[in-house]
Length: 132
Image (tube, rainbow, N blue to C red; front, side, top):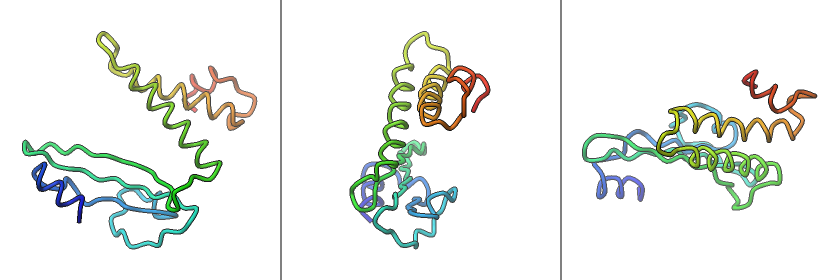
């Protein structure tokens, strides 16, 4: 209700039905029933958009721990994604190629996944070049 009110006051309306999902529902693309239980240890996915007065919808997506604290594995993944996002944002600058931000973020994710042993004995460069 609060999100809808702010969307109406500061924009035109909500841009689409918000996705609020936890547990197994959080992996379902565009889950909108929003009726599942949330349990300690789960992550809550929030994806909501506001339609501006010129009819453009901008969205915000966040993942939060239901009980207020990430598990060690959740924190590890969250920090890797945040670092990748930061690298992507840093790559957006005058003169940069259009996909530089994507490549910067993907490189950081590849480095983390390789450090976690998910590519076996492949190097970061090999995994990145293969698109793993």
